[in-house]
Image 1 (cartoon, rainbow, N blue to C red):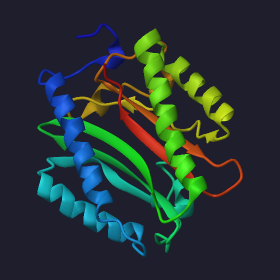
Image 2 (image 1 turned 135 degrees about the horizontal axis):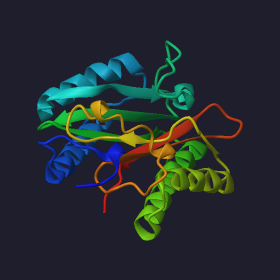
Image 3 (image 1 turned 90 degrees about the vertical axis):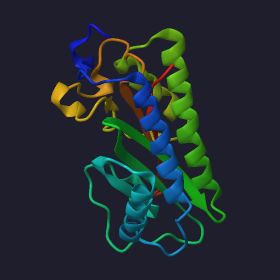
Length: 220
């Protein structure tokens, strides 16, 4: 399929199943969103998420469900959330899922706002817009992974947000993708192939303690 060693896949890899895993992962994310409510904690939201996964027939998780609320939206994947945070009346949160369907990995994430929080809404919209702009540049220009994240940093700053440079995207594929050691998208010197890489965008307000996250499969 590809000559890049970092894009190695298993014998059962099927691009159609990759797209199906992506679609089902988005369905799971929006199922969790429908259960989010003012006052819910991150741990309670994860219990709700487990119910959604069972309903949709998720094979397994390839990374734990991550739900960040309020000030925890500036935390990276490896950072623990501050305990006791609950969703406020005018607040924001994001959902990050790594699910396996039919032996193929989905990885999706998005940010949402409850109540009236214009700055937080602007941040969530900016994360989606920045993702769309960078993904469009990949499709149009065939930029390398490194160039994609350089562009993301430049555009985030121009838009008035702070890009989390520790988040640099990664490989996915037939489970488990980790055996292929694809590494970070942001370190890839070549143009990533369609259907194998997750573009992650995490931004934060330059001075206030909130941020937003959006990720999806790079696909033509």
